[in-house]
Image (cartoon, rainbow, N blue to C red; front, side, top):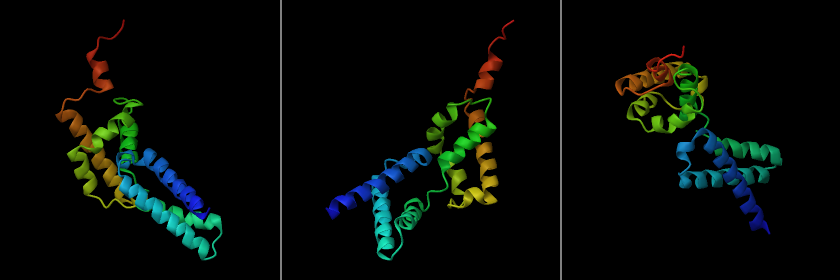
Length: 162
């Protein structure tokens, strides 16, 4: 019977992590080794916390810290924000969310992210503003250098209705 409880807890942490990653790190969803290892670590942390006398809510909170460590900053979320905020006219919804997977694999975008220490606290750090600005500039350069169509350009190219 105890084995069944462990399987349920493991499934719980795995599902919790997969749900979070599908929203904030979809590019990492295929990393099943990472997901399994992190879910196992969270389960161990939860069990250890309960054994040390923490109540179940406290134990789950401790396990969640382990589960999401290093995942609070999201390249995906950052790029969606840049596209939605800075390119709203050129790339209306749902284009930003569809373009982000393509941008994440772009070498220029990766090089921009690589300049910064991508930590859990980066989004609240002063470096985030620099990252955001550099990503915006990189995207502008990608659009211009590759003559990529945008909604604004398409509107300018089409004849206006009388």
